[in-house]
Structures are given as C-alpha cells and as structure tokens.
Length: 196
Image (cartoon, rainbow, N blue to C red):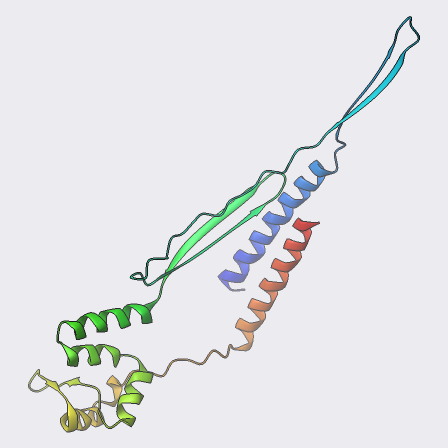
C-alpha cells in the first residue's frame, strides 16, 4: 500500500470518528423549557421555548496570488462539523511560468541567445527550434563557448544525451489510477456523511 493511500485511509478514519462524535451531539434533544403557572384568578399559562444555535464555521486561509509577477498558485479549503473545523492552505510554484519570466528578463537585458537557451530546456521548445531550422544553442565542451547555427546542429548530433527529455503524457498507469479513484470515492462518501 503506498504512503499516499495509507495516509488517505487514516485521514478517512479520523474524519469518520469525528463524524460519529458529532452525530451523537446532533442527535441530542434541543433545550426545551416547559412551565405552567396557576393563579387564584384562574389564569393558566403554558410556555414552551426551543433554543437552536447556528453551527460554528471553519474559514479557509486566504492565499494571495493575485500579483501578476508571481508564479504561484494558491489552494485552500475548509471542512466544518458541529464539533471540529479544519482548514488548510498551500502555495505551489509554476516552473514553466518561472522559466518564461526569466527568459523575458534575459531578453530584455539584450541577452537573446541566453533567453533562447533557457527556453530550450523544455522538449517542446527544442523541437520547435529544430523544425524551424534554428537549433538551440549548446555549449562546446572543447572550447567552452556557446555554439549557434550549423555548429550547434553538429554538436547536438554528437551530444544526443543533452537533448531535453519528452514530457510524460498524462496517461496514468493502472495502480495510480486505482489509487486516485479509491481516494476520490472515499472523499465523496465522507463528504456525503458530513453533509447528512
């Protein structure tokens, strides 16, 4: 069993335990006050008061990623029951965005070949440059200088191991697919239990 699946199962049991505790609290009768008063004037009064409270709320943390100069994506979420509230947040960096920004800065500083060399670290840009007849720059191991044009083409033929690897397709193998499927189904079941 993978660590991720094990962690998801443990988290599921924790949520289930909190749900059971909160369900028992929800099943309790509301506070009811009955009072009867009699007077010598033969007045009779019956009063019934029911007090209900709003549930507490968990508020997910705010992650500010609205600045256009950041290559970050913020993700946050929260879950609240009658007893326990949990909230979390995380910021993730986008490597391709960072590569694009760095290449733009290099280009703006007049270092056009360096900007192209930085962009050529991805296979799609490498292939596009090759198909356009303008190969990506490469460093010559003998002279230590950067090569461009036909010299770069000749060096790329000798150094095929330096060609960026193709990105893996988004096809998942069966084990990863089943793990994500089980995690998703478990999450939906636990969410349905919390809502009920």
